Length: 125
Image (cartoon, rainbow, N blue to C red):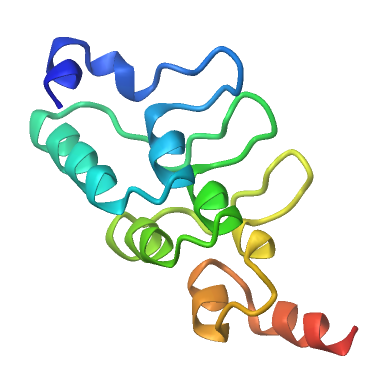
């Protein structure tokens, strides 16, 4: 948080290898408490926050990464508290919910952006 105050651009600065921002890394590792702290602090200070920022490589958003890793609490935080866009697609054309493990609850899939017809199609294969 102190580093963010020294340089607010850290929120949008990308890792030169993965193209991830700090938000991507927090989402990937399921650090929901740290994620909330960083976002709350940034919003209080008026720093720009883009919850739907795609990674330079692959186009993954923080929501995609949380889904890939099965971080249920972080998915709920991203969508429920911060309004992450569940319609964003990565460079493969996939939405975040499509990366959730197969045994994920229907409710979480829907929260992450799955539509009724998506789930019907999924179960008909």
